Length: 49
Image (cartoon, rainbow, N blue to C red):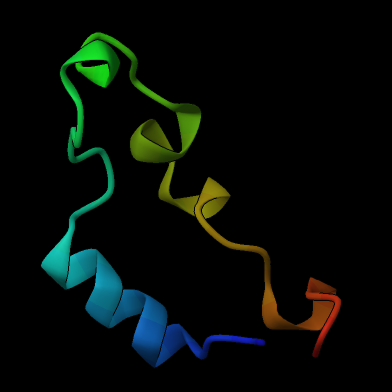
């Protein structure tokens, strides 16, 4: 299954990147939160594209 950028953007609106879902994860800042370019690969680089 491949999700379009529109769907991924909508998911980010509902649960913004970096949102903590558990208390154990609150201290961890994943690199993709700091650098939006790491959140998804360019369309041409996706396996299903």
